[in-house]
Image (tube, rainbow, N blue to C red; front, side, top):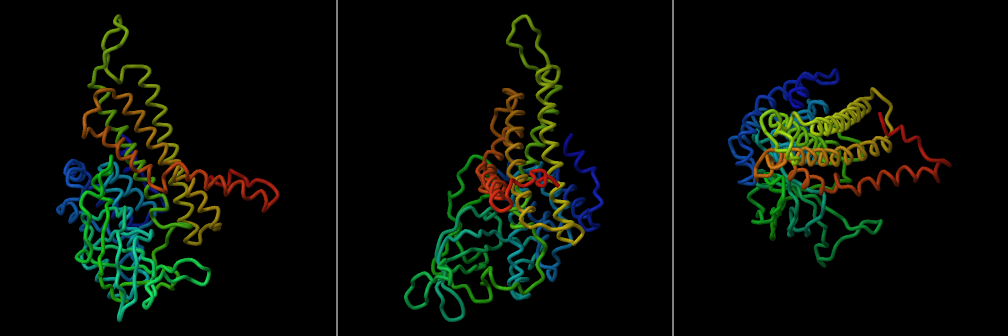
Length: 417
């Protein structure tokens, strides 16, 4: 089984704390698998599982150091994500997104950050950098209005970090920066201050993420719970990936990979027990695993999954070493590497899960079957802006764009660490 193989791996770059958190996550996998149907039906992580995740310290991993973050290495974190996504795609997805939002805390004063992000082990905020509303200055803070979309985990989150266009306090018109762009202020609001819009997450897969909408109407947000991204951080930030946070890094690609691995493992359980009638009447009925065409195609699927997995972790390791000063850093190259491997891994994961689904035939077509659910989750995941196929164009532009700068194309091999 791919999951069992992954959990047996040990990497020299893993920290003791990272190994401990991974071990705690591994113990929770049976509970996550058992809760998968409930998670999908309720469109949220249930309270008992949320508490277990909090007790295992799987939230707040990338909070500022003053709040206990920054102790888990990147390889361990992404193995946690991969394992959790194997068990349930929505849980893995939310761990990436909500640990990423924890990085917002670095712009706040310590006690304000603690009250929002670390009051309880289950404290977790949703967030988005996409502007969805306005913030008008009033005495002591801002009056915020708007509707924000695609807030993964909003069904169980304890708060939200949102971006709003700054309005002039007198005219109510949008304020522009010196370069002409619209000024943006980030606001952090506890759960009681926004409304979750019912029915705003009616989708194919990753149902349990409840990546729906939140609405604020004339909500007062004090200055202490606001910041601008261009301002200096007040707390020691956790290290992030070149040119992106956790969502823009490999995290979501590891969710996709975990779902493909689950589909593969489920097929291996199915193959020795499920008979498939041959279309050629003279041929006897055989088990799925006994058919040469199935064996060959399954080997190709395995090769594709293992190839992108090795590439993903090679990029993660290299960037971890570069950030720690153990390897030379080229931020532009590292961002291109991350973008390329992220989208390619997700696209490969989706195609591999679909291939397994096709091999399983009618065994996997019923709603809720683990293979069927994995395919739906991957269809939804690959629609995300960071995992969608147009991301290839961005890397392609980076490659050919070097022609004018250096008089020739860059060495494409540099994209492979």
